[in-house]
Image (cartoon, rainbow, N blue to C red):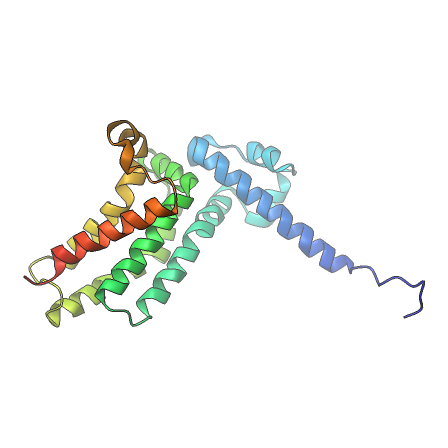
Length: 219
């Protein structure tokens, strides 16, 4: 290359792709904050566009409509967890390993996604078809697969057969989720159990796995 020549500029197409990706990310971040604060019905697309610093027309361009944007916000959070769940189920881990893996994943999920918890609170009041659809697509297949794993372990005598698999799943999910869903109340009533770092998450995971193992193993 001659000494005074400059590298060729990035193509217009590449710049456009980078700008589009950055714009979509700003919209998703802004929408997540707005939906967490006001719920699906309380948010205007203009508010999201203003928070992201773009024109409202770009929301329609990238996501179609308000429901499409809402779905994209929820799917961005739920898809990685669904993927990690299938990886755990295919890992060949024993019962204790699976319990530890799922407890660790779900504890990290709830600790990291405060906005999603706020969105779920709004959903509990108003509801939306979008969350129902995503739950059916992402969560229900995983739950059904976990149910199958538990049923197979019961057939092998590794897990008590007198407890329905669904009740074991609900108990495990409740132990993980409840402290995050009711964090404000627990901060007042039992401040020492409020998770505030990796060490606390590890302590909570150890307790959950120990309690579940004690409860589901044959006596």
